[in-house]
Image (cartoon, rainbow, N blue to C red; front, side):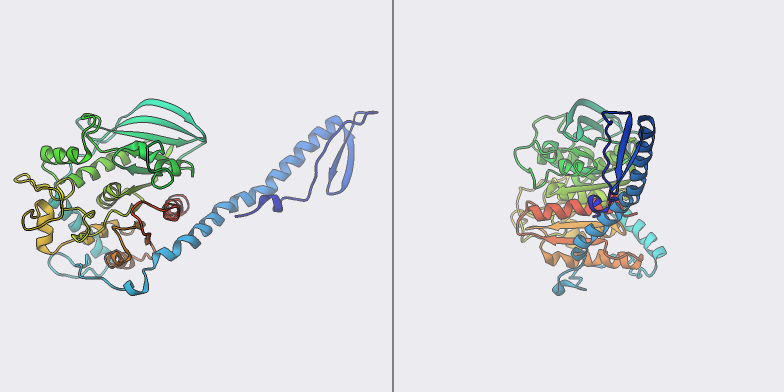
Length: 426
């Protein structure tokens, strides 16, 4: 980044009145000039204007320098470890049509993408119509250091259901890039929860970097205060006869619309980020709704893995919803078998790779931890292949950490990824 203090003209400016006259003195680059007070004021204004103009090009260079700095840090995460480079695992390629034909061109991919999107909506349950102009009710506004905090209710269904959330807006002139932050509840995401400070308080961290952020909690929490997230999701699945993860994606799509219609927000630069449950929410939302410009999926478990009890897509609050039966929580077994869509997909040999493919060519970072170890690059390599067909490279990234909760380094990469793709790249 340019150091303006070293780049400005060598100039000291001081002005005082002579005790014996109305003559002023101005020293510029070692030369002292004398003139009347009126002349001095005019010349000082002219000189200050010249200084500002001389500095302006440097200020204009700062975004370019920041973009380069960010990419120097981020670029290495777009390469898989050598042992997983070019490895695709046992996953089916999304570059094959349902009839077995190969996708050979961008035009082919357009048709294949439509086929995959229809498949996922058929699998999970079709969305209701999106809300055209979601209402945003501001319940409370608080001035914070450098930003404004609004407690809001965002309309997320045509019937008027709302999501509880916090809208944080930087001070200054917009429009700003924006990020949606879904989680169990929104307090953690704005740094006011009992946990999460400096690890996954994304709404707070990003508003400090010049983003509008909307942090939301599980839909239904307003209407049924105090109900457990899992119970809220299962009840929603039962009520709407859809897999809960698609209901979460539908909620996110309506929140995107609400953000895009705010004058403070650049509608073309809206991303999404979430950890764990929020990471699953973020992944399904960004894949099923292509208006999200980029995404960060923080350790959601991007593929099925019954060896890890935390990658629990089999549960009824994710993909295991079954209107005919409800299984007990826990890893599937003979005494507690799979149910719902999860059962169908496993039986067919399917996984989430064809869901990831819907993200192409938009940038995505998998911030990996205990649920997404480096071997999951084998699944991401399929998304890399789709991007390559479309003429894009280095838009899929993955990091590794030994913990589920982000470390300080992992958090920094997550934030920098959103900053790079939403602030600087077009």
